[in-house]
Image 1 (cartoon, rainbow, N blue to C red):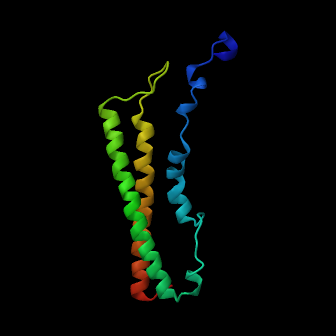
Image 2 (cartoon, rainbow, N blue to C red):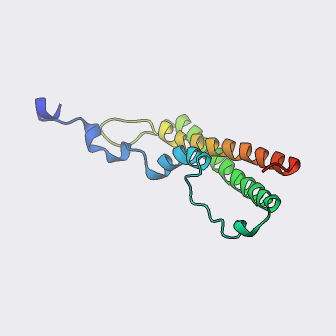
Image 3 (cartoon, one colour):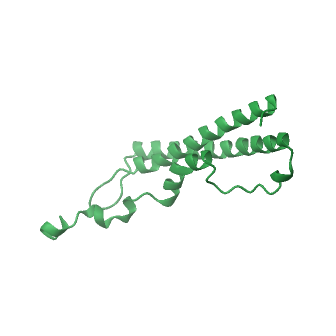
Length: 131
């Protein structure tokens, strides 16, 4: 449109249609956690015996899964409210906002699920003595 008719699509002028950094980060957070591509402060853990390391990992998974499940729930409620009220972005094209808002609970739900699975694995490892 831009070169043929000297009229660009209005979406080209809408930087707000791109995913915000927060939504993009939530989508990749689960994979980053699974592949250990995140920042981990383990200065104290290096001094602990394996059983104590498992205990600290269990506590970490419990706290983090609670936080991310709260984010997922509140994000889901917000996305449903946006859908019900038919929220749209202001501009030439009335883009619905709920799909973009819905990425927050989706990403937070993925990391919550991953944390719960890691929690179960750490509890089993602690119970069986496996490392």
